[in-house]
Image (cartoon, rainbow over all chains, first blue to last red; front, side, top):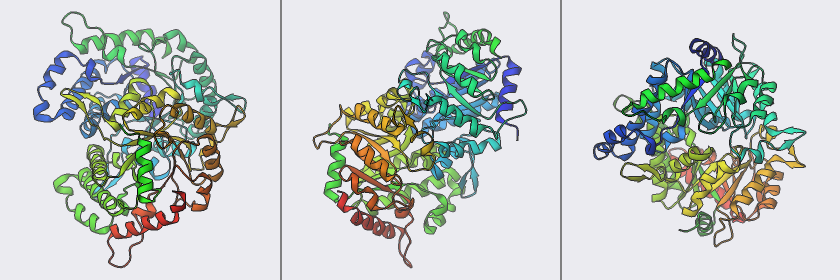
Length: 300
Length: 300
């Protein structure tokens, strides 16, 4: 089985792109033509399923429009879970749609639990839960984001899937202001997030691909440039997944120090890119993604 | 709107019980009569839906059998998510079934995210996501477990729902051996988990009910008795949700120091209690729950 890290490195090189398109569907921001199309289906489908179908069409449109210039996509599980079973079904369809377009999928789920519960979360995302007639496929994402507070044994249920071509990104230093409360706290002489980086290094060492990257990466917010450099120093072989580009305010210059093994996420600035008069939402998204790809091409 | 903490305190007092029944359905451990009933439905329903229907019947059976002696139930989201949209639907049915039996539901989901994503997770669990025809109800749980690594602003999207009668339990010191890696690390002179307890105290202070408890509680593993005492000292007004009783090895004596405002979870030892010859699984579960209730009645 190919390493996740090799597949990701190959996608970046082939498209000369570090762009990850974040799929955060928000009903209030849906293109008006999609809102109009699905609002009238509430009576037939129910409200949950009408919104979920709207999200699925929107995200598949974005995927088709950006597939040539994105290295991967990152659906945000929360936005789908709001709409219950129908939302979960839409999430599964969006992941299948990305795979049809040969795009890797990082599911942003921020899970983390121990023992059989950790295994169940990993199976929900990567597949393999037992059914009556063999194991079931689950969401079949390629990688997942996980939260480290519970420690090593909450990460290994996910990391065990690296042997099956999957990847894991551990929240390390996030982009929000509240990150200071715990992540920046000094513990035994270093910020807590650097201890998390050590944990990522330890757990990732057994999963290095042919291109020299580990299947276990770290999430580091673009709003904390010092943190990006410090995490890169601690994790020379890890992919760093950097959210917070574009709408959240960070720019390309903040990333230069960590070039190589970077994936930079933008969501709103691509999904809801301003449309020229009469322009399709897909065309606006494709243009925004290509602009971002060019701006960040020096990081490939 | 009544405080969640008042509703929980009332349930504990009315039933003289600190027992929380953990709903962790595992296909390999299902009663043989349920396995037989649903295995033959794979062709008609598909494998995901057959397992999900089996879990829903099992969990509703456990709920009906333990409703008189449990203070609340705690479904573990992971076990349902393994079976996709059908699993999510079964989770919603199980929560509705608990409400029909007038049991509070703590959804063990260990979520945590910031900004609009945090709000979306909270809405998925508590309701309120926008639909085309008004807001949708989501899972309508009464409380949720959350992970604190992202800091204050990853907890407030959930805690904001305390104004609507909901509760939040923040992972503080968990029961697994890996908890030592980060949670026990000394930060500015104290273990990290005590800084998390401070955060819980800060955020919970604005949500104290009529009975003197906060709607914002903490999860503290029964396998760490010293941690339970230390967290209780830091959080005199918080409910402590204690997993790890029974199957994970901790006993009643480890909890005495934190009496008052305790909820003690057991999953496997109740769900899969040994059955006498010919006994129904519901009857075995009811007996195990009542034994636990009696053992822990001194903690009410």
